[in-house]
Image 1 (cartoon, rainbow, N blue to C red):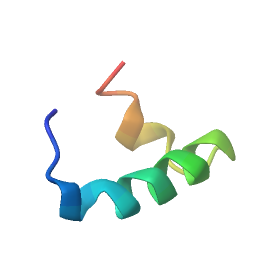
Image 2: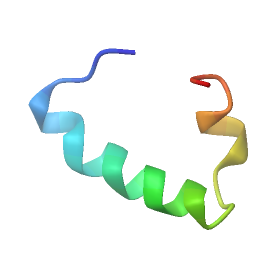
Image 3: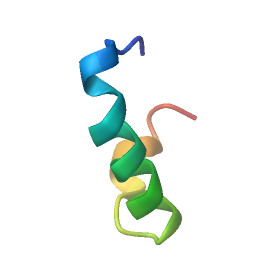
Length: 31
């Protein structure tokens, strides 16, 4: 999935939440 520069911050936040186990359903599709 390619992301624009404007999308970088929300993606990083989502990644941190995923590390905490908050968004397993979202990042699982990327793996």
